Image 1 (tube, rainbow, N blue to C red):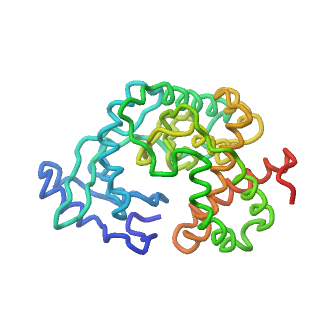
Image 2 (image 1 turned 90 degrees about the vertical axis):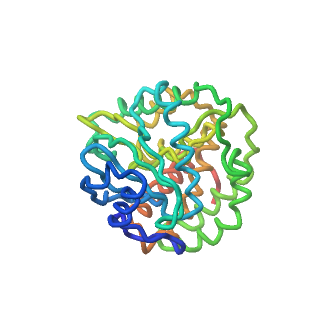
Length: 309
């Protein structure tokens, strides 16, 4: 995907010339460095490589602009406690006439986007990711950002999303088993609202594009725009997108996930159906990831014998 490919009706016009103008106005010392779009299936920010060791991140739409401030504030505080590399904010750009939203410059992290054939041992990678999640969840949450209203609990989000899920399931006709996902969704709505102790969650560990691999090992986690405190089950989507069989079992064991938390993780995963129709014409990578996640989760339901069709 190109940094200039638009995926949202209200998406801003962003290109390399805009990036150069912003740098010239706000960080002139960087304005003459080479600028190149970064191919990415990411839906939130357009990315541009700046020189050899930096990347510029610009929100595609206004509703995601607050993530810039959140990352710039919290990444430096979280990074010292985490066993994997995370982005290092170098500068925060201000909104102005050229571009109406906040934007940022981060240090470039080397590595390739996660792919199973780039990982030397999936069980080892599951241990590494579990170590990252466990470390993140041990960090003090004083002053931490809360998720949007209704997102802090599985029950809250599912009930709030219900009006969007049924049309999304219909839009995925021919790409998913409609009856099975509807039954799974109806079962998910019966889960009790989670009211446990909130912990730090990255919020989007299920996306391969947010994990970097080097020399066969998981080395970095990127894109912390959704970082907040909330239900630890939100991190479990990685179990179905990145792992299978023994490696999925390793992730669950290292996270010490009980049956109730696992069920909530599956419930979170079902909301991925919204991406299938929304990005059908603009982002085939995201659609394929959502289809894979849903296929794996529904297979998990079948192995448990629930829900009945």
